[in-house]
Amino acid sequence: MVLGIDPGLNHFGFGAICEDGSFVKPLGYGQHHVPKESTFEEKLDFIRNRFREVADTYKPDVVAIERIYIAKNPQIALNIGLASGVIAGVALECQTRVFFLSPREIKKNLVGEGQAFKGQVGFMVKKILNLSEQPGEDACDALATALCYLTVNKFNSLIGDL
Image (cartoon, rainbow, N blue to C red):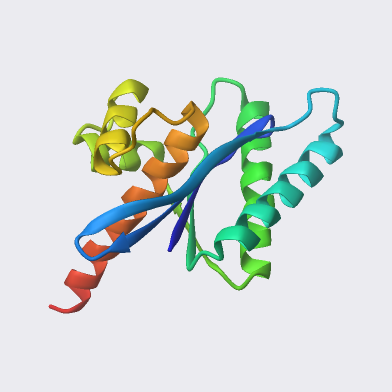
């Protein structure tokens, strides 16, 4: 079972998926919004606690995290990196493997184009997982990250068998 994460300091998305034969099925997804009035330390603590609840609920084999991107504002990139680190730390405490994927890699994997728009990625997530409605943006990105991990992992397994 793969738990995808779209990290952020003000909110983060999660998406749990598993392979069922030749199909991939969603187990659950959602978004957590950090209270705006929180201090920086309280935000990190909120993220840690909410992610721990998600990890305890789904008990993933691997946590796939969308890697931070180069932001126009270095402080934003740093904050996303800190949120990612908190999430990775909790995953490792739970003895779960952690895997990072770049946004470009995720888009290319799902849409075939590394510069794809969010709407294109959302369409593919909804289609692949046969969802009746579009998940929220953060949950959708998390599901896309989990789907990309499955593909990359499967490809790496095939190469290892050569």
